Length: 272
Image 1 (cartoon, rainbow, N blue to C red):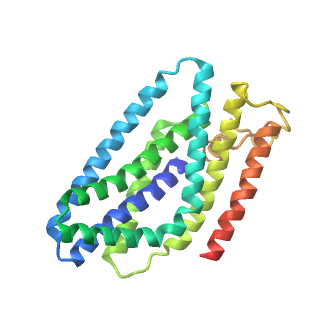
Image 2 (image 1 turned 135 degrees about the vertical axis):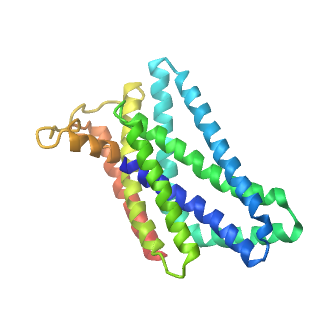
Image 3 (image 1 turned 90 degrees about the horizontal axis):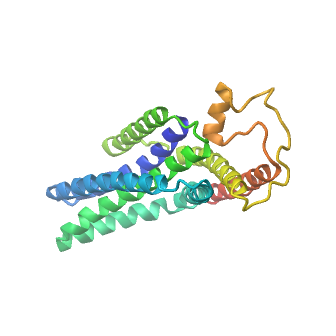
């Protein structure tokens, strides 16, 4: 639940913030009559996201062969890791430029009467975040080997979207400063930890497909301290990819990823 909550909170914040900025800028330009085109783009973006989710699931279900399914799962997990890492580290450095570009685009479209452009602007913002959310949910499902609770994930996802909407509304409707920089920093760190777990699961899938060597099947076993199939262990496995008896290659990949990208995460925010 927490992983889905965190992901939709981050994705929702970006989508709602961009749409909210567009609406606020239209108000500043005394062009509120164009609001309906922004709302139309949001609706179409949500609809297309649902279509992508259905098509994605249908494609995945076609892979009945276990070997090819392992390939597909490993690909999804790896791609999700790359996108999560990008979102957590580099995208935040572009936040200010992205907002300025959004305002400039809205201004240009209003002055030229480009109504389609306004629809497409909000559609793209929502569709991009919707696609990323679908990708992350699929990766979480495959990384937990059937232990992923759809009900809990949906509850967490809805809660994340509602909170992100409330935060954006607060930012745009009041003069109070919401400390988004600190919020993004620490949620980015959690997302890096989640991405490390997804990458470790991708290694496991590639080992099952005999693409990567096993090296050492079980480096150690601390299940007597914290079993990854127990109540709390299952929670940690779902959120961070915790494994009470990891293989050598999985642990090396997980540790290498954590050390590398926590370094970039820390350096990026020191330079910001």
